[in-house]
Length: 337
Image (cartoon, rainbow, N blue to C red; front, side):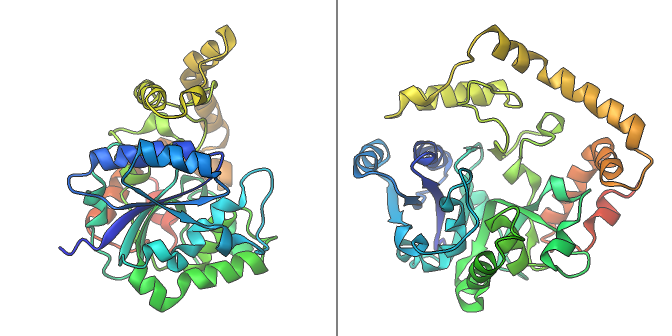
């Protein structure tokens, strides 16, 4: 296979160190040389120099010229750097590559990235994972004026046929939507991407984007663990598995930013971490008893939790067969056994 491909990350100055560490981790996991482009916004020259010494394989791109003057929905969080994903077709450093694997900065790469980079994209130019939040809650369809039954993906891990996207203009459409409908983009650039690729994306095996929501219910080891809640380097590490806390502790200690790892602040933080899984389990059981028979978001969420193992299996099969995401996925994935 022609490996005209690269791994891509994006970060502002706050997440830049963690993006560098995740990139170095991915390079170490790769079975063959892996080009990596890290697109940064507002990172000081001194930090860039530290990063180059830490991971010489990284190529850095500057997003500021593309983001300056853009009227996107932002705030104290997230920063405008979250919209970098919408500009991958315009980054000069990515011009040599026909496809890219984009990953967020708050991840642990466990498997060889080439296993995903080599995956076929036959019927659509993007592969992404279902967003667990929106399987039981599909109000996004009306808000974003999506086609009937349109599924919704999480944009934390994306396999992109960049050559096809450059020709098709989907990212340009996403940029236009994000700027023109700031009030509708509650999930920022992710909403805009779902509008641009509505109904035209391949199902990604959930193990390549194993998010924190229901993370304690995953029955198999992930390929990429995506820390969508608390981060391994936060003092409050609820929902993060011990092995990832340990690996991030070691990785940060060996980086130019050893001060960024937050140890638990005391007995209170340790107590919260130790009893968090038990609390989650009790809360789910109570909500299941109260709402499981109702055709509401809470009811469907309880059904998703009860059927979670079979939902994961069904997604794995869809991904293995190279299927497109289906319309009304809740009708099959959440169908009572």
